Length: 192
Image 1 (cartoon, rainbow, N blue to C red):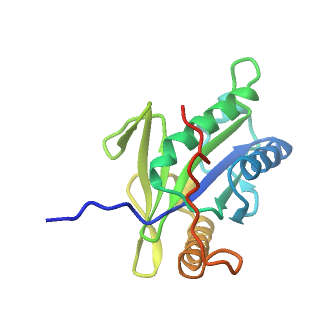
Image 2 (spheres, rainbow, N blue to C red):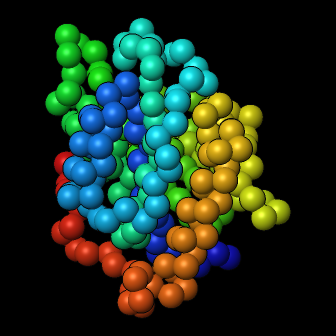
């Protein structure tokens, strides 16, 4: 019989894209201000693996991956999705988003994305939010799954998430910035 217990804390992440790099930087500053310092972020890269968002958001989309330093319980993924949704709505123009923010969770064994859309491989978390295991860690590296989005399946992405995972594991082992801690601050996360 399994024993029910709290999970190991995870590293929250945000995948952010827009054609407006200044708006991407505004989102990163807002995330840092509200939640935590950045543990690692990727370079901004062309988001050209799909044209799905061009009708709404225009051409020339750029994307960045951001992972936060402060570790959390995975139950807060829904809260992050609501924060991202509110941020996106603040910058809408004529009913179209100018920025897209996808919160996720990084652990030693997987990378999870949140979504507002159901599908066969997604698990409902509540409040209209589903979770999708996007990458799994096997044999020394993250691996893609049949449903992994093309931008997460690139070598650039795999390298980034492998590096982020190592930094995450270092925080679990040694603490952050020389301090041996993993903080789960009561009341730190917004309720809805």
